[in-house]
Length: 255
Image (cartoon, rainbow, N blue to C red; front, side):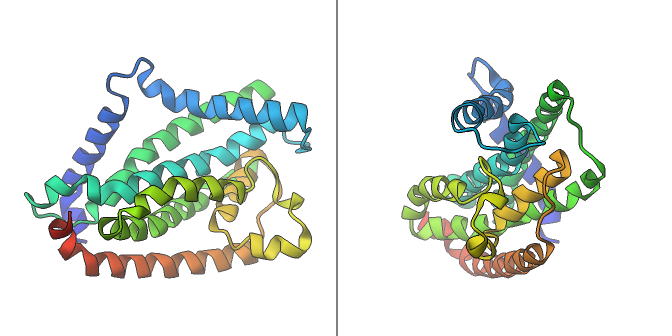
């Protein structure tokens, strides 16, 4: 509730970050369109034309793009959230506000790009004449799940990064490795059966599979594994909130 009273500050911080991200850029907000399109094109050439990964009946560009939407949000948000408290250091020593506003504003910034990516996806699907079915009604659940998973991991990294700056250096490597452990360029069905239960413990597997099911009509997620992932995510989230609140009083002194 305390954060709600500072929602104006949260919006101002998010607006500032969005403006600074695209300021003095030739294409500006167009980069939010170019990035997923170029990534989809590269993956399509390599894994559909050269390696010939079979994703039928879903066209490979649609298959990849629907997975990139939650992943790009997760990776961009995690990068911003993990650095948010350190980046807001000068503000911490001048103004009192709930420190949780900083990582939350980073989530909002990436959320703007998420909405742009969704619009671009509609264009890609229109090209292939491929449209979502009734499963799209479940999309809000997977959007919320992705957001909470990102926040759960991010607040741990944001708090730890204040005391251990190595965390910020580790995040890019963590994300690069994590990406290959997610079904972005391949489907969950390609993972050997004996490893699949362990593989599905990765919370982003459920998020990506859910987006792909809702938007492209691909295989339905394993709901039992989704339930386990949700419980795990809630435990990580609650632990992160407790640790963040415990550590936040020292942020200004350390930074």
